[in-house]
Amino acid sequence: MIYENDQPEKALQVALIAAHLSPKDADQWARLANLSLESGNVKQAIACYSKAIQASPKDINLYELRAQLQEQNGDRRAFLRGYSKLVTQLEPEDGEYIVKCAKMLAKRYMQENNNEQALDAMENIFTKALNLITLEEVNIMTELLIALKNFQRCLDILTKYTSIWVKFEANHLEDNALKEKQLSDTIYKIKSCDIPEDVVVDLKAKFLIVLIELNEIDKAKNLLPKLYTKENPEISGDLFLDVAEALMEKNEFKQALLLLDPLVKSTNYSLAAVWLRHAECWAGCKDTKKAIASYEVVRELSPQHLGARLSLAKLYKSKNQFNKAIEVLKQDPQCDTLDPEVIYKRTLLLLKVRRYSEYFKSGMLLFSRHCATIRSKAELNTIVRATGVRQRLEALQLQRLSCGEKIEDENAPTFLNSAEPSESKEFSLFLQMGKLAYKLKKFGLLQRICFSALTSKKFEKKNSYIMFLCLIACIYNNDSFYGYNIVRELGEKMSFLTCTLCMQTIVLSLELTNMP
Image (cartoon, rainbow, N blue to C red; front, top):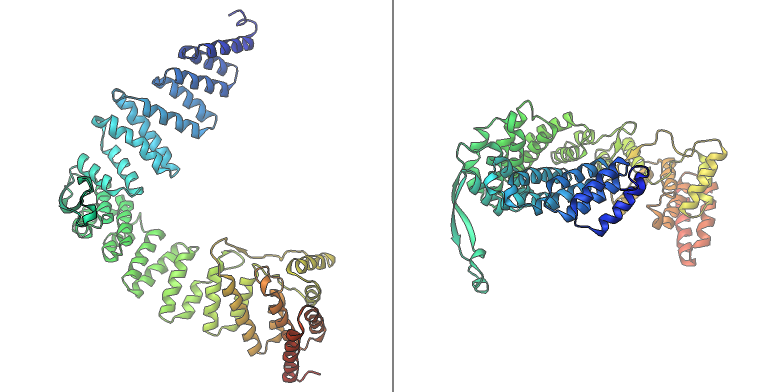
């Protein structure tokens, strides 16, 4: 009190000492929190409110004041922890506040996809505020239970708090080893059930999902018309889609189509995601023609959806419409972020229909992810003289810098960091391209393909083999200058036997090409 007028900071520090000496005085800590705020020390104010809460753990006002400061300070985690602790501390007489707090926590945790914590918050309502439970709380609770795959509990809540009814028949376990188990282990099968007209559409859909997930498919099929004939797909389309996806998980594609057909014909839900499910259902029903039609709509609505394009290409391929499959898988290197797996599959299709020029171009585009693009004959010499992939790439960079060129290729394509062909698949493609270039007598192209592969980290383990292929390419392309350098390199590294075999192959190649 002596320091309060002329030295407020010192007064605050002395008062903090006093509060620590009497820690159970919640009012004292609350006063210190206010003083800390006046001096601009938010962290200290939060700490003081925490001490006040320890002294008075059921004072709702203290929690709210601290929570406001925590959110203002950007400490979202502490904010949620504080309210979680408050909800567990409150008693049934604080039912209205329990409902308010628990719902707020559940919604925040659900935004973070933290369904376990959200369920913990909602459990407080269903244990401490039973008389205040409304359909809103039931809807949130059942949504969480479905997300966490606790379908039996979800069924219990739906039948307890709504007019939905279920009759069970008990089938006791037959296994002798399990006979001594308690009655709670009895398996219950649904004998009959129904959804009365007064049940709101959200809970109607959730009950259908629970039946499907509990493998009560026949019961769900009987009740499906109560959703798709009674409800408006323009308003409840998201619920139609949820039930349809649950049916698709059980391979009930024809039943799912009963819900998806109204959606794709609607105004609000004729979206790419819905058409995709529609296409997948027709594919599941083995109706390729209708599946293709739906996938084409997805392609039109969402041209960048590579998954849909891959599925569509697969369907065209199954009908031997390879050119259409190639068109579907086409990506623009100038505009698109390229998917390596899509390029790989399109490259194989181009070979199948003998569009060789596009095949080589597509293959080289795929390899450009890990192979340098050779710009001139001079760069071949740089690559041959260096040993090892890293040294070749460094030498190539120095060569380009000395010529005043940019190190990176202009307008180089960008690739997705997604699934890509395995090393063995890509190396097989490399060999396939080399064989075709040889067969078509495109020896310059063969040389370019082989020399580019020398700069690949992905093919580094195959370096000696690629070097030998480079030599063969040089022989067939009448390039004695680079061929000689490669022979010298191979001779230094190979064993006598390997070198002899190599030279025999070279002599044979020379005889075939009539080279001196």
